[in-house]
Length: 104
Image (cartoon, rainbow, N blue to C red):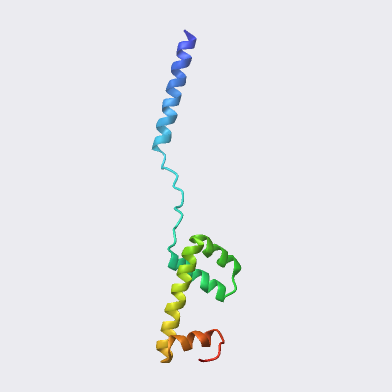
């Protein structure tokens, strides 16, 4: 008889514990933010300009190397175009000047 009551008590205890657990707010893990390739490229290039190796490594891990390369290329093109318009020069002249190359 004690065995049967012991099992009933155990079932009752488990049920009460399960109900208490169900009423607790669920623990939420912070969602890992995903970054697009342009965010990664902007962070990567600005970190390179500031010589911040930790930020360079972090930004490089946000996307694939191919995506980062594409984003850096797109950023470079847009920057050269913007500077060319600002300086009223050709993109070729601006790019060569930025790289320290002689004018053609």
